[in-house]
Every structure is written in structure tokens, then in C-alpha cells.
Image (cartoon, rainbow, N blue to C red):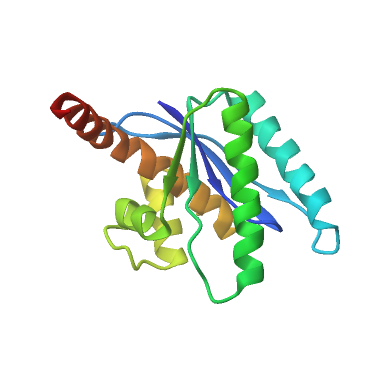
Length: 170
């Protein structure tokens, strides 16, 4: 399974592609950040994010896109920008007929580190270890995108079994 993880943000939108299956070593195929200037209009920033994600989709041909589920924060302005960037990632995937999975930050942290309260350094350290990298991806948004992809690859088999069981029960 090849998954594009997206850690949405207006200034830095982390992207990372991981390939593998649960129970086997995973392989990073690419990691980076789509950046936009804070002084640009929001609409222009969203276009830049869309172009960046489209380039990643073209270059890596993932089977699925895993996006961080936006959660409520105290700063409404930050939440709005994150939600808008998240919507762009989902739109790009849907336009290509790719499934989209949403994972909460605590779900991703728990999957990768064993604790839903892990800090950014712990997530970066585990991503480095799990993907056998020389150093943690920088900035943290890039490591978070890889963590999203890892989380989905590891959780997809169980989620699929649950969905099939529920469908069979109906």
C-alpha cells in the first residue's frame, strides 16, 4: 500500500509518502513541505497548496491519501487555515478517485509512539526509527505527514475487517 500523508497548514503543509503493509518494514518514498507566504491572500495560498499536492500525487501515485483530522483549537484563525488546507488535500484526492482517510493527531501519535500525548520530538524520533532514516525529517510538519501515512498503513487492515463485519451483520 502506498499512502500520501498530509499534515495540513496554510504556511507549511507537510507531505510524505510511505509504502508498505502492516507487520513488514515500511519504506519512505518522499517527504517535504508545500510552503506559502504568510503575506499572500488566502485564496492564492490555497492554489499554491493545491498545485503542490497535485505535484506529489503525480510524482508518487499513492493509492490513498491520509489527512490529519482538524480539531478545535483556541485560535479560530489557525483552525480555519488548517481546515481549508485539509479540504484542498481531500479535494485533490477525490478528483482522482483516491480514497481519503482522516486520522486525529492523538490517533497518529498513539499509532506511531504508543502514546496519544507524545510530543513532536517523540513522533519525529519514532518516524526516523520506523523508516530507518538517518535523521528526523525537518520541519516537524514533514515528520507528521509521514506519521499519518504510517498510522494509516498500520490501522487499515483492522479498520477494513471491522467495516466488513459491520456490513455482513446488516
